[in-house]
Image (cartoon, rainbow, N blue to C red; front, side, top):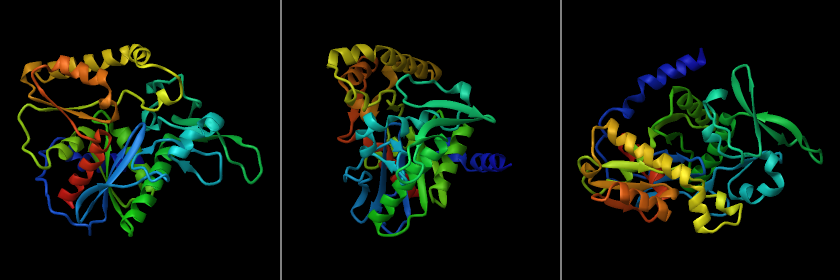
Length: 327
């Protein structure tokens, strides 16, 4: 019954997926208790509105703005971020990452990654992640289960704590971005995770829409533009193995073909030709890679290609701009 209620609420409030983008306000108002969050597969980012405008929050305990989406359960206090990634070699069985690829999905719909150090199991139709968990002081780790929703909630709790500290007050509202392809079950799971993390009011915003907000806050929106969100590449993989650029690009060929096929399908479904696209926006850390830029330039040779200085912060900043416009 709870899921049905949540689904009804999402359907009632999902007009932002299809309606016109509201007018963007450029007024700075740091009294708003709202944050924009990019709950990323590999890294998370959050932004708020301050007197000098939208700014990103140092989320990692190192002071870095980007928080690796890694969560560890080997100690009494759950840890998130770079410290977890750096301890991965010794505590891999207690660490969860890529939870966004699992959240809200049925077991049969999940694409298992051979690099995952954890297994998955299904209990009464719900998917759980098999890990080694903390079991008291000086006690050995024990086998345990955690859901992707719990992992997302732990990431969001960390983000909320850092956001509250950064603003010096409790933030109660959050605009959280999700892939445009997320279905109702995935949206419900993400919303539940945010509520469990302590957010009172949550709005889900498609990542491409958030990116458009960030790019077009101070410039006109051109007709027939397309936002391309490249997130099929894990920026942490090359930190785990020794590899040169040529080898990496060879390994990525299947993913590049997937991106290429997705672009062709998107054009076909939109009844557009590549030469009708006048601007391509590159979003996400993966868009920094030369092979991605080359692929897009070959696919859209007549388009203007734009990439911000910090493309992995664009979605979070767009979510914050959106929040500023509606609250």
